[in-house]
Image (cartoon, rainbow, N blue to C red):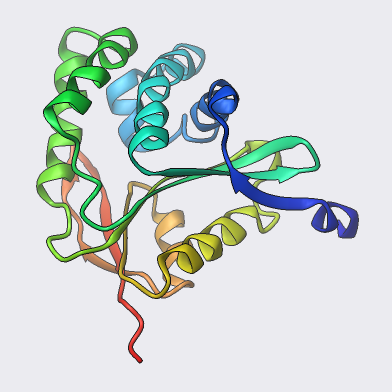
Length: 205
């Protein structure tokens, strides 16, 4: 473990690394309740659909916000996306660019579920200026080894004490975020499952 700690770094993801980051996010978040509702109950099929979904989403984060990777040596083991204040709402052009990945990732009634999920969270987005976090994903083989904590601490440093905001649909994530000062603002139901919208207040001088 000491050797692993010594080689851990966080740095901005390069465009050429996006495909690796996409695969990581798909694997790490395949068991999220909302993802199961949207992308199906068959595990392998769901991961494939998530790869197509995250191909568009990570390209969007990389283009409009900041996308960072946690590395063990040269290996990417974690990903976090950050949008600066007033930058997290997609423009019409952004949405048009996302449509192909949405259509490739799902269809029929599942496409309606995808739209419903994203619409609920978008409408609930925090009104006050904030840094919007997401995705935050750690390779399953490296979870529970402090990488998620390091990425979250890195996000707090980048935010320079400003308000932080995120969404999750897993209760274990809620407990994790609470350790770092996040509080739950609301718990909207999305496709029959609970989600948590969470904020970390801006630091006071």
